[in-house]
Image (cartoon, rainbow, N blue to C red; front, top):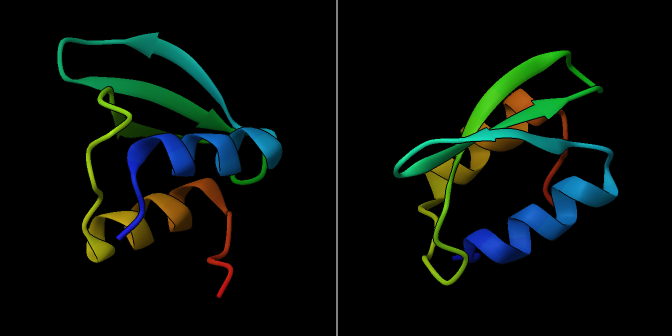
Length: 65
């Protein structure tokens, strides 16, 4: 399972960026899909596969195998 920090780096490379921060989550924006999505704030926390796939779909960033 990937960690939050790894996903954030990958999403930044794709052009996504953080719009704002909440208590437990950050709001990110994807110029690829035009959607806002949530991502956890803790970079060392592992992301479950289904959660990762949902974020990738919202961000328009496919998984690299």
